[in-house]
Image 1: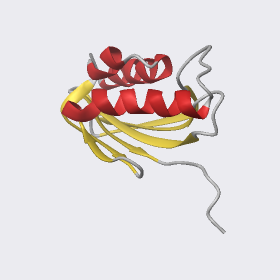
Image 2: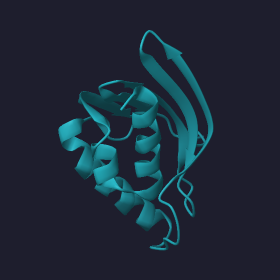
Image 3: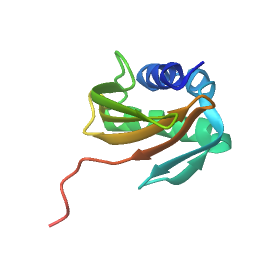
Image 4: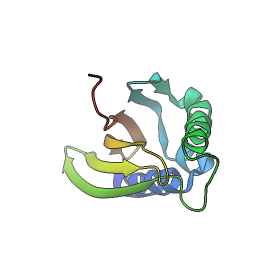
Length: 122
């Protein structure tokens, strides 16, 4: 697969909450940066996704009638063999939403930097 194929499958996996699909796209040196959870490596990703699903279920009162996550406003740029994507994400039925900066190569998805859209404390 090339970088765009990995990126598309990564997005599909997140949208469907399918940990196996996402795991199949991750490069060995994958690293996610989440301001709440810290740094997540490939070996820690399954637990991270399961935790995200649990948080989404709690925030929605247990209701889950569709995708885990909706992705929109996707912008991509390819430079020197690295495909960079920026996107907006939302977990339906919850206040959970934010932005993501994802990088992929011919080895798979190498990183994601996650942000949360939230009001600052007063």
